[in-house]
Image (cartoon, rainbow, N blue to C red; front, side, top):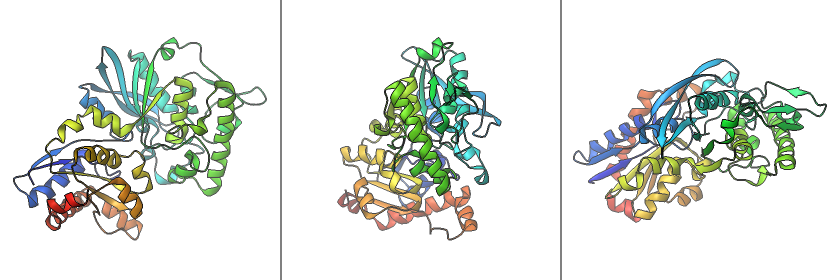
Length: 391
């Protein structure tokens, strides 16, 4: 083994992308001391996207005071870079409206809002940005992006002609009419490119509320309420703005924020991992590699739908380079694993049986050690030729 590329996603709650990569590199060197290991920071539109892209684009990070999903003031970081002479904001909505900003007991998509994401955009507009690259993974919200639009000056009217304020997931079903702002010409001339890590539609059985609501604290009863609100709002948007978001892939990303960007900001949606891999020069970096190691905190059915592992495996296949994946938890069918085309995939430890076991496994020191040990054991037991045979 002469050259190994290591490019995992972050192990959320445990390790950043680079921390996980360094741990895997230690495992490679334990077996192949002379092997060249190249660690690459990756992301798919969620946490880490802004810093990864800003670094690749040679920009600088800045900060803004915004509202968290429950309206409390926090500091959110985003990047600013020059791209083709245009001042570009590089953001991830999770900095303002992310799930990790809330304690587990606080998670409730009926109450959570993307208002802070709108405030972050306003801050960048005030700083002269007219192009936006925004990753929208890792949200705590299911307000269809209406909170963001409210911060940007959009108005929401109910069936009785009354203005609705404090937009959140529990209020979107009351919207009967949406009025666009007339006092923000800079918004109208701005370009929005949105990086999302899922293909979820706005509503329906595979939509935002049904698929991701439970991860954000929604009970089965809450999912029903959120879905009804999304269906009602989609009818309003389809009627008045000509966009049936139920048929658009990615419109349900971040609880419908992807759809708001499409319908009201003229945004184009791109695969988050494709955008990041292009920016970091991944395809050039892997030339001559014997193996690529990637991974994420949990491999499940969503892994095959635009996540880091699937994006890396797709490019690696074109170049005939085997890919090994590692994960904190593996919850995938054999069919899903085969569809990814991985040479091998390993959990980094036994699945914790209780909360205390999970907390121990997610401790950064434990997770790092488990990654190193798992990679080393895998490379000791699987020869390069066996990896090739599994391609």
